[in-house]
Image 1: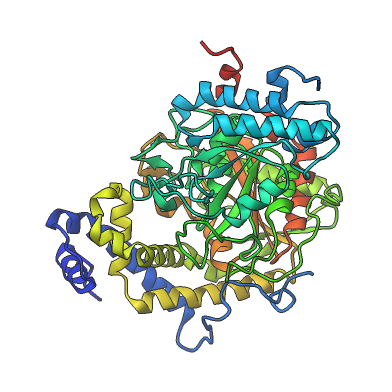
Image 2: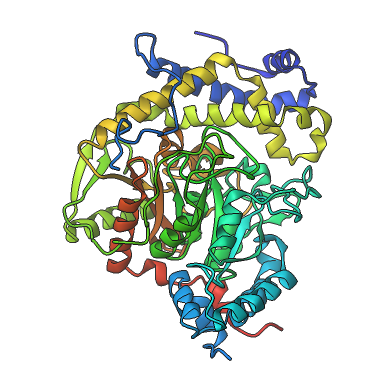
Length: 71
Length: 484
């Protein structure tokens, strides 16, 4: 079981990202970061290592027939 | 001199009907513009739907518009029709704030492609609408330009981020408006304000000249009172644009043609454990009734399995956290106090994410898209609510959906809009009912890539069979009284 993100972890991450954060801001961010990171882990589990989902083309339907279009 | 009906009747016309009356010289563009500006003057001090109103310019253009139509020179299908733009869409020489203090005095040097297209079709831009700051949020509670208020109940939120556009259309301050949709920002305010909103297929409409939120999901979309109006506006703005790298070089069609083909034989997908789950009771009832209405019209309801859709909200939050934080990185360091508190927090949150989280979210998008492509072998559209609840009190950051558990607004509001945003598929929000307090409910139809026409066809069929879109907000009724 990994440790949840807390205010201390947020301060470390902010420093690594290169911006200053007041302790009270870190406390506000921590529960949201913890929840969103839990969600990110769920997403990682869904895509899995074995699946061959690539980044291209993720969003742009330049060839609608290939993408299931009807044109 | 063109004869014109009374102001109240004018403002209640659909965009399509108004355009026809102007073309036939039965209605004066000057009178229409006067009526809209009067409505804005009375309504907007409370609604905060607009950041800028171009009274003088709009009247001047309306006079020119009348002169041209009188001389037999219609500019295009939207000749003389007053429309509004969300204030993250650039107009040359006119400030474009994106709802922010940071861009409060920014005057772009070029028009956004969509703005140029609307002008070329004859529409008159009456003003720029209020929004969630930099479009990063779903409430339109803007700390710099005022909290936008719901058109049906000013004590409620209008959703967002295109809240001003939704309210302006619903309260009859204009006949159509453009919003932008990243995670639902056209569809959500459309639903909550009882109007129609389209998120087009990604790449269908140019983003050139639009202040970005999350590049890989951003798109401009029209908001109107009827589905026909929405199709007419999409006609004006759709098409390939070489100035936008994300623009799709796919031919457009006449979206306003063949709208009356009905729903018979079309297959509407309901995703098990998703489309009808975790809803306020009134929303569930409205969507259930919409399905019955479609069945009565001859559509076929098909149940779909798509277990992977469970990750859609988290994937959307990850992408929407990271991409805006990249765009705002410099300002966030140099001018952190010029952001509203909520947006500053979200932008900082985005900077805390790991590259692998973002990449996995992008890979999930490919997975989800493949699931929808599979689903479209069985169905023509997928249906779900636009959002699981009706308008919450102004300023609320949590919402009750089921039971007594308060939920975070941002995650809850994306429950149904995320799938189309992540996959890039087109999605149409159509009014489909009201709750016990008279607050509007919207349903969402998600279609195949570039198949906006089928969404419009089904939307029109529903609006022919129901009258939800014809109901007016009380605020509009109050505004019909002469200004004091």
